[in-house]
Length: 169
View (tube, rainbow, N blue to C red):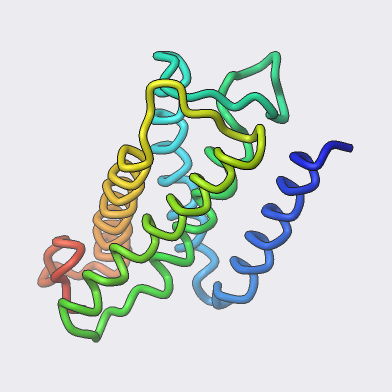
């Protein structure tokens, strides 16, 4: 087994443990909705960036099925999005919420850059770290809007607006 595969397995384990310890049992339905929504977004964006040869995943799980990374697009990013949404600082200040939005794409992009430089898990072709950061920020924001909309529909609430960053529930 190559070092790249060992790193990927380690990321799977850490991500799984993170989701398990941060997801309350009574929020499993919400976690699944968040996961599937983010998965749909990352599938689309991941497909486009490899199709247009902006980046590639030399080491991937299903090399004959897809050129995108199953781990990143279908498990890791959606799982981290569960933590982002379910632990979102609802009753904190706008500054705290803004920092929450900035923290997640920042550490994930930093990790991606390290993986790009030191492994064969991802390779930038015509891609830059700030595009990763921007796309992560954008998809986290969209997932937050969707989550708030979905929860409003489920609870029958009609007074809160789905504004994501500034929403006070």
